[in-house]
Picture 1 (cartoon, one colour):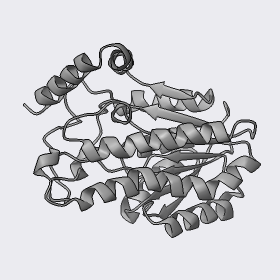
Picture 2: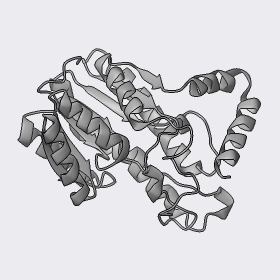
Picture 3: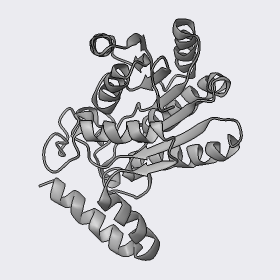
Picture 4: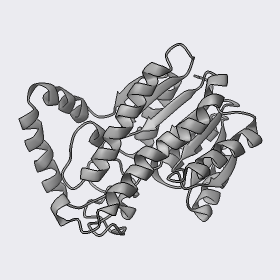
Amino acid sequence: MRGMQGKTVIVTGASMGIGEELAVALAAKGANLVLAARGEEALQRVKQRCEAAGGQAVAIVTDVGDPEACKRMVERAVEAFGGVDVLVNNAGVSMDARFEDVTDLGLFERLMRINYLGSVYSTHYALPHLKARRGLVVAVSSLTGKTGVPTRTGYAASKHAMHGFFDSLRVELMGTGVDVTVVCPGFVATNVRANALGSDGRPLQQSKHDESEGNNMDVGTCVAIILRAMEHREREVVMTTKGKVGQVLKLFAPKLLDRITRKTMQDRQR
């Protein structure tokens, strides 16, 4: 997997942020990109960037919350490039609301459908092709998938579900040649929270937390870490030192971790 030349990579959530930059970086390494997201105009823009970087790319408008759409996405990938070597489950939606303020409980269903079930559906249909090529499944999760975070109850639940699914799948796939890599970014300087869901289940358009500012990891660094994890087929990657320390605290001082997490989110709201 170290050489991406000629490899076929599906990237969901490829129209912006981490997905977009990862796709362009893979194209520069000679990969064939299958770009999936809901916005056709944005996908065409990313497709042009990938081709300019030196790779081949096809854009497939896909709602990963629809299993039939995921099936068509994989079928079109196989039609275009003959198979699938890597599936990057990156599509996701966030939220920004305290649980007690939520007025539309349907937002929890939407978060699970996109963040968790979207990964399940995509992986299910891609798996036979990945097994044929001894490929790789990549799950772009979050530190929130390992530690609860205030105002992110539904998002954290969906990412915890992702972790449980992919950890279990990894064990099932032992001996098949297919590996599973879970990557856990912290705060990354993207505009992903521009469409975070509010208490009424609608996109906020303007989240209280501007991920493009502050001491957030830049998207290029995040993508470089993901690429390295893919090349080495790593099991799991926690991207930041604070995240790694947090995992130790969760084992030995969980109350302290709760207080630190609460203060961190309060500071970001100022």
